[in-house]
Amino acid sequence: MHDGSFDTLEQVIDHYAAGGSPDDPAQDPLIRPLALTAADRAALVAFLQALTALQPPGRGAAAP
Image (cartoon, rainbow, N blue to C red; front, side):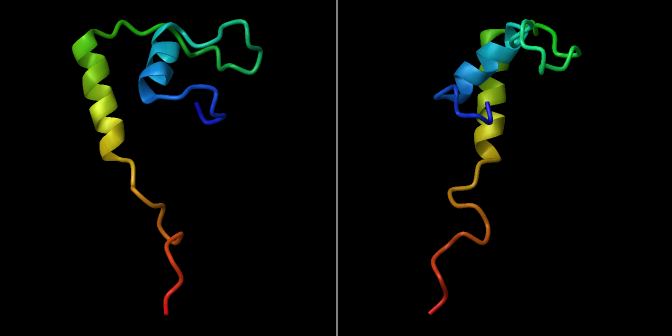
């Protein structure tokens, strides 16, 4: 999650696959449990990792 409450993408996916936190009044009511197989979860993790940059644009070392 964006607040850092989970350490891994797998934990975030497990959280949302279970339906998130339905008792949280800030959670969108459209969030529902997801029926994801182990293969679905692995594919989702691989996809999300492919989108992750090693370093955000514009945050590199200063030019000489």
